Structures are given as structure tokens and as C-alpha cells.
Image (cartoon, rainbow, N blue to C red; front, side, top):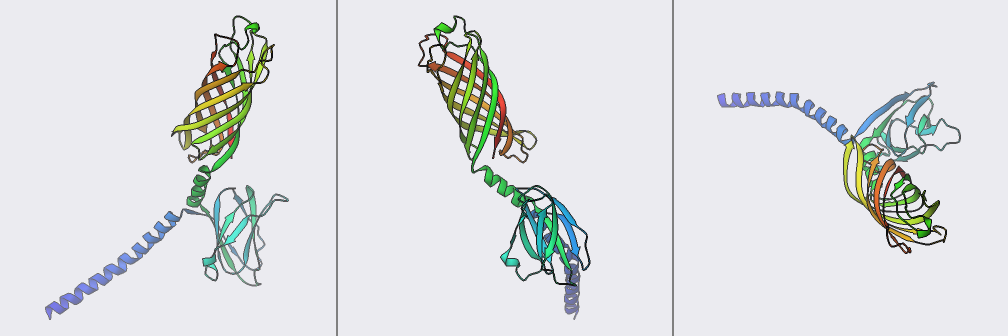
Length: 306
């Protein structure tokens, strides 16, 4: 009898422990799933009969949003700007007929948007919750960073003295550089740059226009300025002059060098604006000069990649 009573007492204690622990576990599980999903609640609004208040929220491009709709109706999200396209909504198949229904939202324009409901039966109420999905947004951004990207680069700087044409002066001095090119990058590690540049030769009294193709390779990356990414890479450039000097020579220039790119986009991403500085050592070819064929270039500029 005592064993039976002790067993019953133990069962009662265990039952009370389960009653106390279960809500805590469920709450922790709910918090963990919310944290793992990365969803941040931006707006909650109840559409009630006779409610005429405008619901306005600011959305960004290339950000994943979710709308949870508890009740009938179909959400419409339109920019306040005239002639702008509404946000793109996709209803999740698994949410059809469930409560709440879930919609994936992508804004086609950045700025304030007005949220309304269509197909809402008279006298009914619907609750709308708008979330920002930080995890999915970051995943898509990192995936885009690994794809082929195109951009432009503009830079200016200085070069040391070298002689293109003996008739252009016996003491060549350095001059200025201005250049621009179209960038193509594959996954952020390999890239190329096709463009044109202009060099001045103050002692010779003329300038030279170059057409060049540059191969670029990222060596290492780090984060020197918080969440902004910094790249160090190497370059190999072949340049061809277009009618250089008083005798319209067509010399070539083969250069190797290093570059540093400081990305201005946060989150360790490479797309967007960035600052670039570079050094190159070049060797002149296809020219009648037999000395002063080496030159060094130092440039800095701005790049934009999308």
C-alpha cells in the first residue's frame, strides 16, 4: 500500500512538473522558430467595416517581405508615386484555405506604399501583418553576389616618365591619367575591364589615347570598416596606343599591378558603389625607344556594379 501511495504521489509531482514546464518549452520553441525565420514585424492592421484610414508603409527594393492575412480579401500594395508599378505578390500554395494565408511580397519601387484589400465581403474583418524577412533577403543578396555582374569604373591618377617617341623630348617627365572601363565580374573573384584611357606627357607636348583589356583576380577579402567588405587583387593589362606622338606610332604597354576595392554596400556585399585605388608597373613595346621603357601608374576612382 505504501508503494502504491508513493507511486501515485510521484505521478502527481510529475504531472505538475509537466504542467509547469510545457508552456515554457512551447514559448521557447515559438521564440526560436521566430528567430530562425528572421521575420521582423513591420505592420499590423485590422481592416474593419467602415474603416477608411490609409495604411502606408515604406518598402525597399531587393528585400523580401511577407504578408499574413487572417480573413477574406486579397492584399494590394501600390506605390504612392504616380505611374509606378504595384508590388509583386505571390500567394503560397500551402497557405490556400488556411489561416492565416501567406503572401510573398517584392517591391518594384522603393518608397512609401499604400496597402488596401480587394474582394473583401461587406461587414467582414481581416487582420493583415507585414513582415520583413532578413534571412531570405540576405540569402538572395549573397546568391546575387556570386553571379555574373556588370558595372563601370572611372579613375584618374599619375604616371611616371617614360619615352614613347625620341623626337618628343630628351627628358621625359610623368603626367596625368584619366580612364574608364566596363567591368564584368564572375562571382567576385575573377573579372575583366575593357576601356579607354588618356595619358599626358608634359615634356613631349602631346597626349596618348590607349585602348586596354585588363584581367582582374581577387586575392583576399576582409572587413576593415565594420560590415563593409575590402578586396585586394591583382591585375594584368594589355594596352594599345592609337596614333601616339608626332609620328603616329602604335606602341603597346604590358602592365601588372595590384588594386584595393573598398565596397560601400553594407553586409559584406560587393554589388553597388565602391572606391578603388590601384598601382601598375608597365613595360613599353613596339616603340623605337631603347631606354626609359618602364613606367608606374597610381590611380584612384569610383566603381559601380550591378
